[in-house]
Length: 244
Image (cartoon, rainbow, N blue to C red; front, side, top):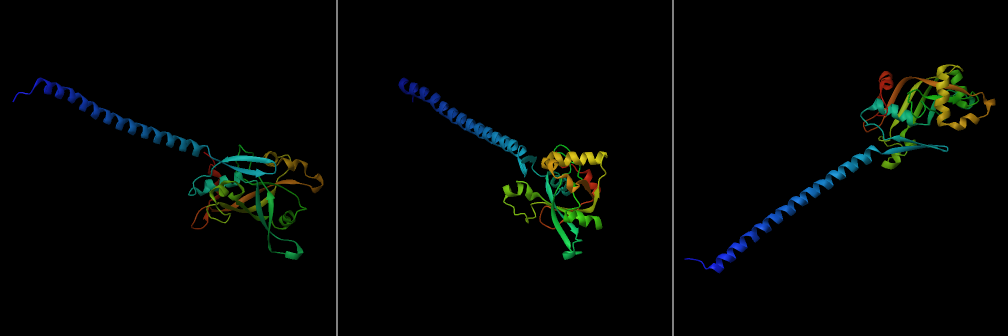
C-alpha cells in the first residue's frame, strides 16, 4: 500500500531526530569517561608530588632541620645511615667507673653529628669532656654503644608509632670512642659537623676542656620493622647512600 505524502514526510523527519539522540548520548558518555580519566590522572600526579615533597623535622634547641622521609625498611644499611645523619643526639652506654656503680652498664645522653646537613659521613662525632661521667668511663675503657632513635624526628609521631614500635627505627652502633687530635683535618670536620648543628657548643665553658671525639664503629644493629634486629656489615653501612 502506498503511504500518504504526509506520513512519508513525518517518517523522514523522525529519522534524523532519532539519530541525533543516539549520537548525543554517546558523546556525553565519552565526555564523562574522558573527564573521569583526567581527574584520576590529576589525582595521581598530585599524590606523587605530595609524596615526593614530604619531609620530616628534627628540632634541636632553636634549630629546626628538615629531612626527606626515610628509605624503605628492607634497605637496612641505608636506614642506618639515614637515622645516624638526621640524629642530633644519642644515648651512649659505657662501663661505669663510678664507685657507686662500678662495672655496671651506664647510659647517658650525648649530642652528636655525623656531618653538616649537606654532608653525611656516617661517623658519629661528639664534643666531650672528661668531667662528664661517660668521659671518665671512656678513659678506663673506650668501648661504647650509641643508641639512636628515629623518634627524635617527626616521622614516628606522624605515623602514630610509639618509640618502641619496630617501625620507628632504632640504630645501635658499637665500637670505641677515639679522641681526635686538634689541628687535624678530621678534627676540623668534626668541629664543623657539630657546631653547624649545635651552635650553642661554641659558648660552652672552656674550663671544661672540651675535645672532639668520634666512634670507630665495629658493629651495627638495625631494628626498623617486625621480625627482629638486622646486623649490618660496617663496610655496607659506609657504602650506603642515606638519601636519593
